[in-house]
Length: 214
Ligand SMILES: N[C@@H](CCC(=O)N[C@@H](CS)C(=O)NCC(=O)O)C(=O)O
Figure (tube, rainbow, N blue to C red):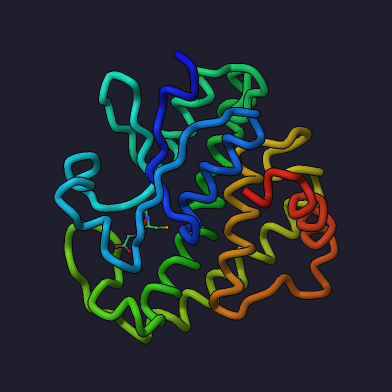
């Protein structure tokens, strides 16, 4: 199936969408992008809910009408359907390690930033968790999120002192999620501390890959 026959519903400013756009760019795949304006609430429209009832982006729509949501699931589909330039590993060992590190980056880094931003930003009042249900913000969570992100930076710096890339010797989906997390953390005014030498070195390399602009 040609990637041109797929559709990626996404939002330019959405960090989750960016994870998939970078993934596509790294694989050299061109998939038509359809913008969903989150600011205008297009994710809640009847038309989009028919594609993704969870009301979040990104969603990958296949030619046969199947909708695949959730970033790791979209990445999995793309890596299996277009195996050239694998980003989720080839050997069982690499596959396991990449999922392990990507999941850590998502749960300990990305989700912590998301929690902080969604509980802080005025425009997200009543929408502290994305999806079909409304949740009030809990401002006290922001402080804890900030602590979690700082710890994530420290742990990631330690990891990158042992290996050139997050999951080991090769660039992978784990680097994508970690890069997007570091950039997303700027919304909480959190930046990589000067003393985190390994993390800074890795970030410079990642941010200068052409895919980072995706
Ligand atoms: N677990 C979902 C999370 C997707 C998500 O939270 N997307 C955000 C944008 S980064 C969204 O669609 N927000 C809609 C809203 O805030 O109503 C995934 O992996 O794709």
